[in-house]
Length: 176
Image 1 (cartoon, rainbow, N blue to C red):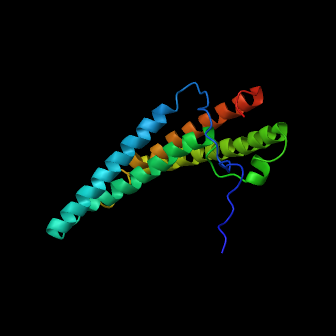
Image 2: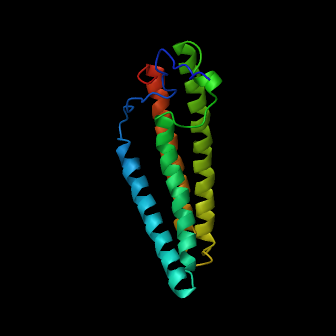
Image 3: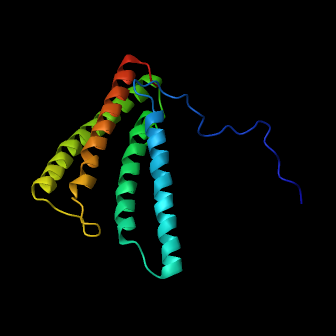
């Protein structure tokens, strides 16, 4: 039996590190916020597991807050994903062809994203307003549910603004 041949040239990585895109508001703001949320989520979960192990009881409120924090974490991380080009996209269109076509596809994709999150901002704001007017309360803690819901339109607006900023940079040719 012969040993398999080694390639003559090293294999290039599929994903090369990209430089941090320029943004008016630094992306570190969302990064720090996401790390803080993740740390708080880990502490809450660890505390709940510890209490459940030691007492056979559970803190009901930790699940409610954990779900809220996961939603906020998803939206905060999604905000930077669009700027760093880590969002889900069809690579056949996004990464193939001449640079001008890739830039046009990126503008189209960002425009659809901005439209979706602008619409989500409006609809989520109406939901938060309804929950505020009708004084809905959460099942576990009994706090007003708009305390949780108000973050959806705020963070959706953040994603809309970040995406619009990316479109401006793409149109100017600053971001490839």
